[in-house]
Length: 602
View 1 (cartoon, one colour):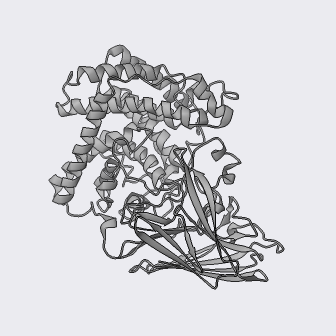
View 2: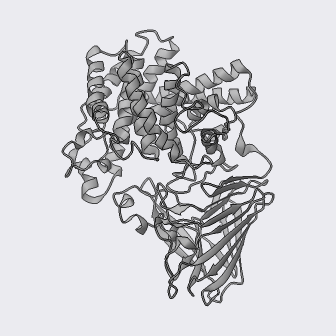
View 3: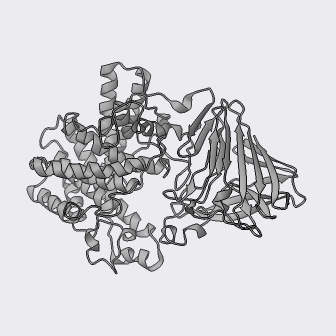
């Protein structure tokens, strides 16, 4: 444990240095300007990146300068006037500029044609902004000018608190929603109340009850085995705001309001309830080499928030930490969400203090550092994540095609080793207007052609909850069987949906993967396809993928005469950068709609 605490301390010291250097480098920078021209781009052509780049650079200045001021004050024993004059003066200018913004919400989240009150929309980022300003106001109360504090409180009330609390339930679909929107918005507003409304206890308690009631819906969005169907990145996003509010509420009430382990709504106290499994989820999404599971709109190069896991570990001692090298630094979040940054500094410190004082030896384990093979099964989510003894990573999923941030990907899998993602999940593409519209599944990374699943008569899977994995069985030894045919529409000439049994066998010692598909009523033109971002080398009935000296071989058994083909695609990633993607394709031998396909990967 001493070794782990030293790693945490080194992480925190490095992070503190990042904050200090970044804050002082911002003193000579002007605030980027938000313009009507930039705002209108989303309405005109669906582009989000140009406006959001400017917006989040402004939030960077607010978050980094605010955090530096708070840390300087804390390090001086919370004495008044302990903040550097240069930092405080610049922070005040930034706050004034943020308070003057026409709208705190993003263009993608408002409708200027239909909503006359669009300027005060309480979306993700308006709520985040309110939380940031409220905590800065509270923690720097003695240091900020009285007029500026009043301006912040007024703007927070006008733009977020009043429209939310004056509304009937639900304020917006997010209030009774099961995604990260609920946690971010409700968690932010709850935090604002705790920072700004402590003097009006009656109103505060009334507001907090509404927030807590709403957050129950967020927790319902997790599978019973603790998996976040939105993926690791969105788990971190939503949970950061839920956990921050829950911890602030726990501290405010001296543990009487315990959203972590206490009796609350449908949740009962106990170590093995759903919340415990949720807390243990992040570490299971990391492979031994640090790459991550990227189902849905995720990323295979994700990180985790050390402060978030630190708070969770305070309440759930068995929480595991991935390698701290994968801990997010100050600049890993391009949105510069203040809540996460603050927790990384302040709550990591509190967790270290708890470990030192308690002498606990449980918890803080490095799940991915285990040498033996590990196979995590999430039967409710229909996910499996495996790590072999020699470091090969494998994951597969069932589910249905109406999950949050859904891709049409039932039966999809990934395969990686030594930091190389051989068979990949592209994760999230560039967020545009089309990405969240009726054209979503025309985008390559969201449809079946962008995933390692069969294509039947030229068609992929269909969108909607009815298109689902109908059977899912997994064993701890690495065997998985799922029925994925119901994810497809009827195939000509049959009227019924096809039947496809997909079987995986993952060797927990060698990392070898065997895949077998059995088709029935699937038409007579069935293609298998495997998606990679490494240029494949086709050699007869097998394919070699090689990168940085690491190789992977795919061997297709009983290959049809047509052989193996490679198709190249362009993929606009989440940052708007174009990447090359390759689909390895081969035809399955079919007769009267029936056939089998076998592939070995090692």
